[in-house]
Length: 306
Image 1 (cartoon, rainbow, N blue to C red):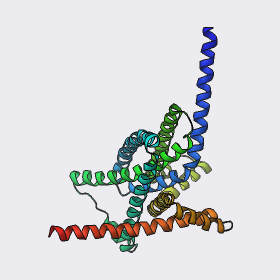
Image 2 (image 1 turned 180 degrees about the vertical axis):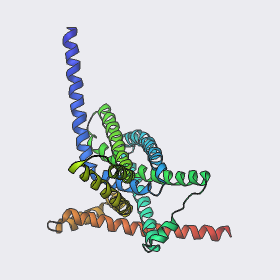
Image 3 (image 1 turned 30 degrees about the vertical axis):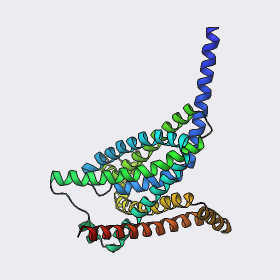
Image 4 (image 1 turned 90 degrees about the vertical axis):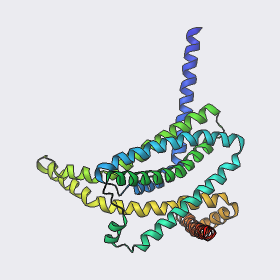
């Protein structure tokens, strides 16, 4: 009797794990586009550091991302149970923030006109340990703020997938997705920011023969590609803010979402691309409006203080 109960318990555990694995797979698939945006944005945020400080910064942002998800998972569960409509409004506010940050980043990039010398001059180069620490903290805080908003979308997408599951399955699945996404994103970010060092190591390889020649050429290729990849990620990360933020805003306004769906459906064979582009347009307009509002409020405060 005890033996049969034990095996029945094992069957229940196996069924639970299967359900969680299936829901996690579906949630990960639905979150794939957000994951790519998260990667690009955070890789862009942690660039610009000295080589020996890149990994410590990535590690600090990784820990901040874990804290974000430790806050988001229980909050999402509570809001879903008590006030589900609040999630939509919070995501819209997060989307507006992302669009504003994207607009400011684009304005900053264009104001420098692509001048490499100006780029180098624009980036503060800390000359003292205190200045370096302050610079790192600014970068870390900016990356963690952005991560919070992108993580919120991943958590909400996952919550929608497991909405009909029992509470304990919702909790386990959310935790699994949160940990997997965080480790995945920042593992890749760490790899990207240290790609040039890996290239140098391969280029100095002592391997001989055809294999050694291939390894050295591959290493030199990584070193040559690293600056272009980082610059590309900088632009991709900025544009991702518009795409993700625009998606949040559009999905929170049903008439606008329906209009985008209709326009995307009318684009024969290009529906997905058209939809993405329209979300980007919404994000750009939202960022511009947010910047105008923030600038107006700032001017009013200055006048009031004077």
